[in-house]
Length: 342
Image (cartoon, rainbow, N blue to C red; front, side, top):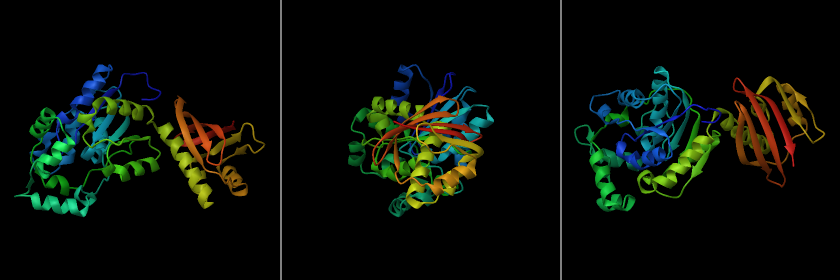
């Protein structure tokens, strides 16, 4: 999104356990804000035997234009997004970012079943008949579903949208795909670990204490959060957050080599109003930190992409004091870092 003036198409991918109705409220909210939105129907991919993920990815990408695409996946669609991104690339579409909404993170080469808690896997085993699971709403008692989705009209529509599921959907390994520039919106405590992992990758993470089906119960609120997450999910912004995370880890451990590896060979790091440096070259930067190691971690206050691959980070030192970093990247590495303390 950042740095692009071309219209962006929102591609909303429903969980394989649900149907396109799950995105109805958010799609309506986005369209009312002037966005172009696609909600592909992936359910027909479950009728054939095997290669479910590949067919779902092809269906998801089939209607996408060549203009920039923002990919959004809910719940079980999360692990599918790299395959969708690969299918989009084959069609010539340019992916700007992928936002995961209360969703599992990619795990190529591993099955969905391998990521399930043991209790849930055992529950599914008990529901399986002749290689098929009942539709997702039937996995739970009616009162549980009513509590999750109180509106009876929406509940009936959701139930009608869900189909029986082949057990092979959970047993086949997920295909590979490109590494995604991601953002994350957590809706429920169930996905707290996934949100934490996303944050460790430098992704923007928004945590809401709502419910897993907030797509239907709180579409306006979720839409605003999606727009916010998408606006802050770019390679440059994510790299800046990851830079701060690595800095904090190095402060705590005293190990600076991994931190320095994110700099280009000819990188320059300078402090604009502190009599330290400048440091020219990756080795000099690493040596500078080793010889004069900082003892204070920092917290990111804001990240703004001011130009392609140029980011301004406002930070607060955890022991007190604010500052600004300007990071410039080239070929995925930092080649210019300027630090100013207030």
